[in-house]
Length: 311
Ligand code: HEC
Ligand code: HEC
Ligand code: HEC
Ligand code: HEC
Ligand code: HEC
Ligand code: HEC
Ligand code: HEC
Image 1: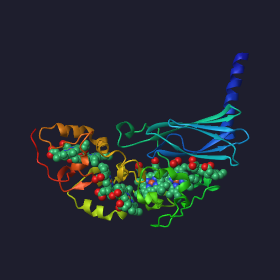
Image 2 (image 1 turned 90 degrees about the vertical axis):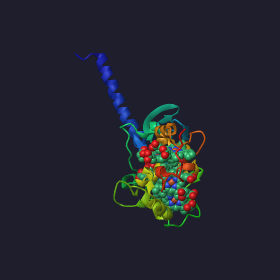
Image 3 (image 1 turned 135 degrees about the vertical axis):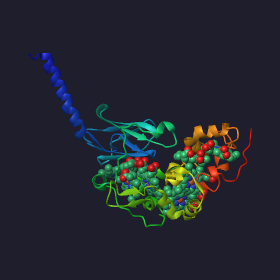
Image 4 (image 1 turned 135 degrees about the horizontal axis):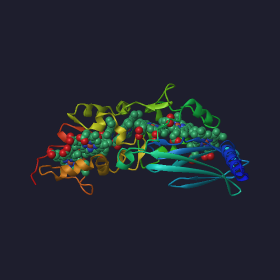
């Protein structure tokens, strides 16, 4: 026998099931980002399609900010560029009608970094997905010009005229910006292609692009006897943010900390060893006073010859 109680329970479950499904299609839909998106930049676009008749306020909550959007404008698409922190970020998006919560969606996004042990290995569920494919671009093309309008090698006089600027403006907002990125010559590294998972993939590894412009370095380092592993494997982006950053030459951490990001143990060991001249500290002496980050004819990428001292 099905009791009235069970029947009521089943009915409520069914009602929740339907309204749940309804909320997704009817009130609000998240066009980007995808759930469990993995990236390295600290900015992200959130784009929502909203039924204006049934929603009057949207709130986007992240670990760093709380954004409230009042649905006064005509368009039913809301676009926001948000800031993230390293590691896990929950983007919690809520839709309200007359102060009642009518729909809620979460997106978990992970920002990884090679230079922090705790953020080097993202949890398994996260994966990088690309945005610039035909289907995604179609969602935006009604209102945004999705074509490339840069002339190779010619900086924009007014960078806001770049078709990429509107959606990616915060990528160059840090104090030290790299010339080709700051001038919005994005396709000098993000080579355009109709094939592949995205219109804008980079050469893998990236140093081939870097050396197209930094030819002198290519020669200098290529001919050196000792080359630093991350450089030799072509991954300039492990240390330099190709776009912009808060530290000189857009390196990803302050100059001493960048070395210690990968060499904490080894460096301490070197310092402690009886006959080592390695004397940099995380507080004082700069690593790059003695070592070059790239390549050298001296072992350990030293800038000059050091005498081993017995302490
Ligand atoms: C119905 C028209 C419309 C559609 C569709 C649309 N946008 Fe927008 N978007 C705009 C307008 C208008 C602006 C500038 C004014 C503003 O900030 O609201 C804008 C601004 C933006 C911004 C900058 C927001 C900020 O915080 O400065 C981003 C990022 C963006 N759009 C991304 C997208 C993406 C990605 C898509 C497709 C998935 C998309 N938009 C689809 C109309 C649209
Ligand atoms: C309508 C908004 C919009 C415009 C215009 C736009 N992008 Fe994007 N782009 C996005 C979104 C959304 C992502 C996903 C990452 C994010 O949210 O920041 C993205 C990601 C990327 C990526 C990472 C690879 C990928 O496919 O996910 C590159 C590179 C990129 N854009 C380059 C460009 C360049 C170059 C231009 C100008 C020619 C441009 N974008 C114009 C919205 C836009
Ligand atoms: C000097 C080369 C270079 C230039 C110029 C450049 N990029 Fe990039 N970009 C890269 C590399 C390399 C990566 C991959 C970074 C990584 O793995 O950390 C990247 C990654 C990205 C991503 C994805 C970031 C993520 O978190 O997954 C976006 C978005 C992007 N670039 C947009 C742009 C835009 C927009 C411009 C123009 C303003 C631009 N880039 C100019 C080299 C460049
Ligand atoms: C389209 C040409 C171009 C490409 C590609 C390019 N760069 Fe640059 N880069 C420049 C220009 C121009 C400057 C500013 C002039 C200068 O100082 O050499 C610059 C400056 C720099 C600087 C600062 C130099 C200084 O003395 O202040 C660094 C570091 C750098 N680039 C690294 C890279 C890395 C890493 C890549 C690849 C991810 C790369 N560049 C790709 C053109 C380019
Ligand atoms: C291990 C980290 C690291 C890697 C990998 C790395 N760089 Fe650098 N780079 C630095 C640091 C730190 C500085 C600042 C050095 C200084 O101030 O003396 C720098 C400075 C530079 C400069 C300006 C000074 C100079 O020596 O010309 C250029 C250009 C440059 N890097 C390009 C590149 C390119 C291109 C690659 C990849 C082929 C690369 N870097 C890989 C850490 C790195
Ligand atoms: C992205 C990670 C990374 C960064 C950042 C980095 N290194 Fe390295 N470094 C390596 C790897 C990988 C090796 C090769 C394996 C090893 O010897 O540990 C290496 C090797 C070395 C060696 C040679 C060690 C040996 O026993 O032969 C020295 C010296 C060194 N790095 C100094 C530095 C200095 C100084 C900096 C900062 C300017 C720096 N590294 C930044 C990854 C890094
Ligand atoms: C006063 C110069 C000086 C400074 C500053 C310095 N080093 Fe060294 N470092 C050396 C010398 C010399 C060696 C070679 C030691 C030897 O011959 O045993 C060395 C060796 C190393 C090695 C290789 C150790 C091994 O045994 O494999 C690493 C890694 C290293 N240094 C990292 C760093 C880092 C990271 C910093 C900054 C925090 C730094 N060094 C600052 C002079 C210096």
